[in-house]
Structures are given as structure tokens and as C-alpha cells.
Length: 113
Length: 113
Image 1 (cartoon, rainbow over the protein chains, first blue to last red):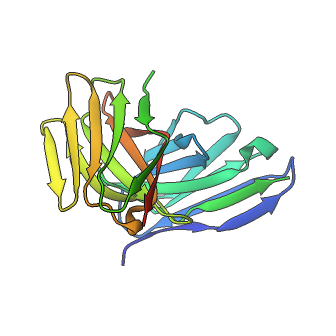
Image 2 (image 1 turned 120 degrees about the vertical axis):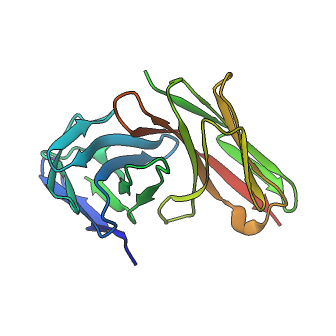
């Protein structure tokens, strides 16, 4: 089945380290998103991309960067991790159609000590 | 800015009763309103959605209503069952030049047996 996958699923790191979270999809969707989930705050958009050459900041992009290496791959980087970036991170894809349904990856739980 | 408010943050109901979760959006250009269910430790999954040209949509025990004038939309679950216990998120898709999704902060539903 076509799916959205994320690696790693869990990561513990230290303050100041550089971290990369990876997302791959076999759905053939052009649109990809990175969200952060914190208790009580819902899903907040970090970055989104509508194709390889189109990258856009979301509502909480400070401290993060992204790379769209191919249609199927969208990576999120924390250049210098800090403890308040401890969260659950989700990648998602969607079709550029009127349906608009988003498909989420399984999530990456990141802990910054 | 774009915002989606969701209430209540927690909701407990007896098995068999109905549950209603309400959301309000700020961007009048929003045209697509999905609802996601997230079980513990899992990814969000779409359960129902509605477009701005429709006032109500039903799928078995789940229904969504939309009031465009008031910028409100609601999720209704009837005959609740223990397996309905989860966190529910509403979202609004902003279409003013982009196709990004703004999520509500989530409602934790507990169905008591």
C-alpha cells in the first residue's frame, strides 16, 4: 500500500546537536508538510512544500530548516536543537485536488535533553 | 492571522450518548474542513470532511455540519462506543494563495462504558 514513512521513529539528543528527521512517501503526492504536535496545542505547521522547488514557511519555522530532495522525500532539520523542540513531529502529504485529504506519517518522537 | 478554535478540550460521555465538538475558523476564504481522529500513539487519520458548498455530511454514526456565515463547523458522534475514545482535531484549509491547513488544538473524548 502507498504510504508515508518517517525515520527515525524515536530520537533522544542533546542541546546544540544537529538533527535531521526524514520523510518519504510512495503516494505520488506533490504536496508535503511538516507539523509539530505538543500536548494541548494541536498540530502546528513548520514548513510545507508543493514541489521540489517550492518551499514555504509555516507558523513556527524558527529554529528549523527543510530540504525537498525529490518529489517523494522531505527532510526536516534542527540546526542546533534546544529542549523546547522536544515534541512529536509528523510529516504529511496531500493531493492538489478538491478532496484535500492529508495523509500522515507515523510520527517521530524527539527528545532534546 | 489564520486561526481555528476548538472546544471543548476534553469531553466525557457515557457509552451510547452523543458527543459534539465545535470549531470556529477565522479565514473566510477557507473552503475545506476535515476532522481527524488520533488514537493513542498513532497518526491522525481522516474520519470525515466537508466542503464549503455543503451544509451537512453524514457517514454512519458521524456527521459534520458547517455554518459558513458564522464560520462554525461541528462534529457529531451518535451512539458512542468505547472505541470512539481518542483525540479529535478539526482543521480548515486556507486557500488564499496557498493550500495550508490550520488545525484546532484537539478534543480528548472519553467514552465511559
